[in-house]
Image (cartoon, rainbow, N blue to C red; front, side, top):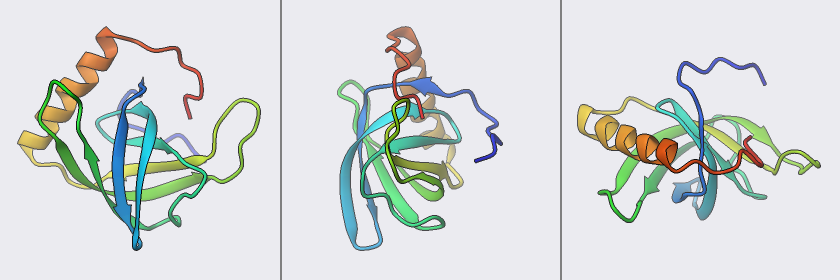
Amino acid sequence: MSDNRKSARVPTLLRCWCEGDNVTLYARITNLSEGGLFLRTSTPLARGARAVLRLTPSEDPEVQAAATVVWLREEEDRAYPPGMGLQFEALDAETLGRLRRIISQQQKNPVKAVWAG
């Protein structure tokens, strides 16, 4: 995987719903940015699949965003879990603002960058 990210990733322990390809997953996000996230799962969607992500942090309103699977890690190794990297599609100003608040909150309460993806 090449590193074409435009936004810094923030380690997190948040979870989100991921709906796509007739599958719904509730999984751990290992890192989050304005551009996308890495979702830890042993059953990733196919590369190129489109999904709807719903993040519901306890203090903030839900963030719902369309995303595309841009890369996969299908097997766990000692350093990283299996899962998929998803890139957000166009976010409206309100959704981007909510996402930025979540990212800011995660930066203020950092988690260890274990399984950072």
